[in-house]
Length: 377
Image (cartoon, rainbow, N blue to C red):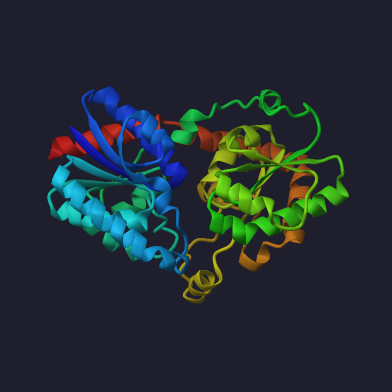
C-alpha cells in the first residue's frame, strides 16, 4: 500500500506522524512519501520536501512565494503521478493541497483533505473547489461534517489528536518543575504565533502588553515558547525590551500547562491552551491588504474567530482582532480574567467538556476512514 502525504508546517507534521503510526498499525507494509517535518520523518516516511515550505499565510502575503510554490506543486504532481500512490492525503495547507489534489484525482488517485479549511467561516465558495478535488474530508471539529453534508461532500469527524495526547488532568506543579520555575507566583505565557509573519504583526503588541502588566505586577513572570529559531530571533529583537520575559525553544505545551494564563495568537495554539486547561486572551492580525479585503467584502461569516469560542458557540474567552488588539486592551483582559475566579472556574468546566468531546482517538479514526475509502474503491 502506497500513501502520499503533504503536510503544512508544525501542526500538520504532528497530525501526519500520528496518522502514519495508525496506518502502519493496520497495514504494516505501508510505504509513505511525504512533504514532511521532523515528526513525520521520525515516523518513517520518505521525504519529498520540508513542510516548512508551505508555512505561508494571508491572501496577499503569499504572492511573493507563488513562483516557488507553483514549482513545488508541479514537481510533486509529476512525482506522485509517476509513483501512483493508492491515496493522497493533504494535511492542512488547503490552498496548496487542494490544487495539488485535483490533478491527482483526475489521474485516478483517491484524495483526502485532513483538516477542514474554515470554509464554514469565510470564503465559502471554496466548497466547490473541494468537491472537485476531494473524495473525503477528515474533520477535527464536530460541527464541520454537517456543513459539508449540506454541500454534498463526504466528510467525517475524526476528533483531534491533540485531545488524545494531552491528559484530562493537568499537573501544573509538575510542568513548572520541568521548566525549572518556582512552584508559586503568577506565570503568563506569550504565544505570538508559529510563523514569522504572525510574530512580525503581533509580537510588538504582545511585548507591550506584557510590559504594561510587568509594570503593574513586578512579581509576575512571562515565558514565551518559540516555534523555531527564526521566530525566536524575530521576537527577541522586537521592542519594547522586557527584562521579565524569558524565551524558550519549543515546549509550548509544557509552558501552557505551567501558566496561569496565556496571551496567544489565534490558531491551533488556542486549542492546545484549552486542552491544557489554560485560561487565555486571544488576538489576531492579518496583513493590511488581507484585512482590508476580508473586512471590506465581509468574507468572515461567524461572530467569533478564537477556536475555544467556536467550539463553545459563545464568547468563552476574550478575543481581539486587527486594530482592537492593542496593548491596553490585551493587558486589561489578562488582568480581568485572572481576577475573576468564578469565570475561571466556569472555563475549567467548559474546557474539560470540550476536551472529552474531541478525545476520540483521532489518528485511529482518521486511519480507519482512509482505509474504508480505499475499500470502497
